Length: 61
Image (cartoon, rainbow, N blue to C red; front, side, top):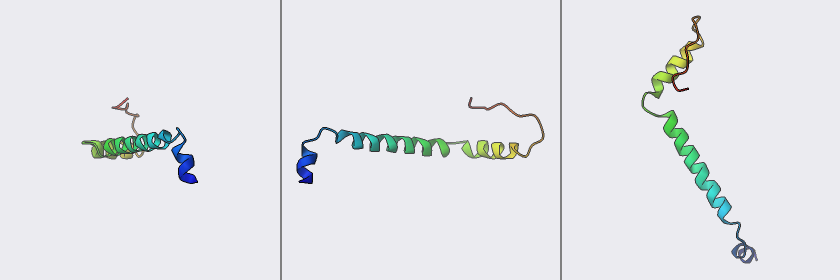
């Protein structure tokens, strides 16, 4: 019965699109986190919370 219902519906494309979108978002987030030079940027930003000087502008916007 379940296979009959699923074979007659047109809404099966939405779960596939959702999985593809999630995979793309997850992969792009990992690439952004582990990009070249990110470690130094994260270290600089983590130390800026302890700095008493003036706030530096963001390098990335």
